[in-house]
Length: 144
Image (cartoon, rainbow, N blue to C red; front, side, top):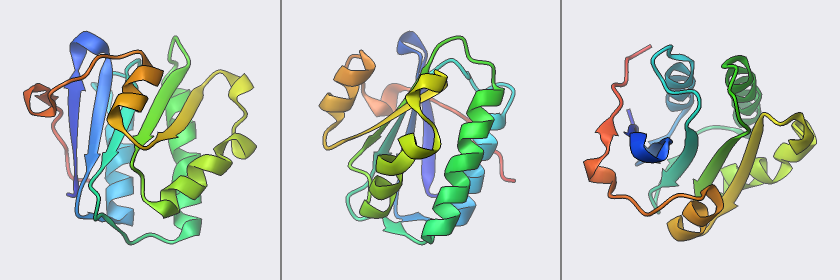
């Protein structure tokens, strides 16, 4: 597993930290987390990426994942427009996030996605305070 999931309950924020490699398996695991009944569906999401992450997924699989992720989040019956911030995302993911509105216009009120260079920019957009990732509750990852 090359990502961790931590929860900041006080700020209603789920923090995904992607490390080392990003593979199809990891994307499937991420969907599994988002679909888990005990995962807080009303929390906004922040994705942190290590600087040297190796993306081992082709464009078609990234697009397929994005569509499935959107469907999963829409099915969770959230009570507010979920926001998902990507910080220092690799170029292959940045392109996908930039074309996201073509697939899912923001007018459907389900999910807003933005890319940021820094964590501070992302937190400002999310309306959240800085956090210490090491002090947040670890969400248990269950192998699929």
